[in-house]
Image (tube, rainbow, N blue to C red; front, side, top):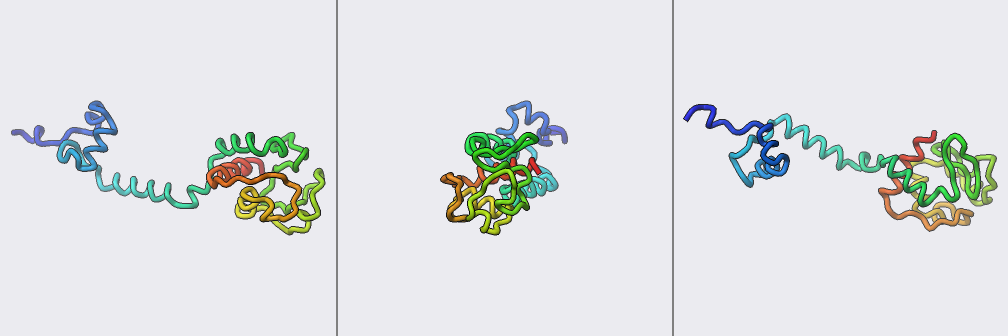
Amino acid sequence: MNSRSQERPHLGSVLRWGGARLYALASANIMPGCFPAPHPPMKKSVLLTLALAMHPAAQAAGDAQAGKAVFTSKCASCHSVGPSARAAFGPQLNGIFGRVAGATTDYKYSPEIKKSGVVWSEKTLSAFIASPGKVVPGTKMRFWGISNERQIADLLAYLHTYP
């Protein structure tokens, strides 16, 4: 037997044989010895990628594209964002992060929201979107809230695109 026949197949040939499924099976030791094991640096990078993806801050970041869909379906009937945003049934939401609740001049807020002293941040806005009446009892905002934390994170990511 020559040294070439004892070598394991190259990853390129593994991909030609059926790709990731076969390689995943081999690396999970279901078919030991059939395919090359990942190199140690590859294992570290995969573990690092998984660790970062599992970190709460990474999950909380949200997806602005998905947030646009949430905004369109749940918020746009009362609120607006963008260059032509203006108050309508609710206030416009451009630059909401860091703004004091009830501070825009183009919308008539309830006295409760004006006296609330809330400054909109990720934390306060998340809580308000989840349950407006719990954060500011007596608010004019008639909205049951969003219980899905992923949708809230996506919505906040979308609102961050309008500083």
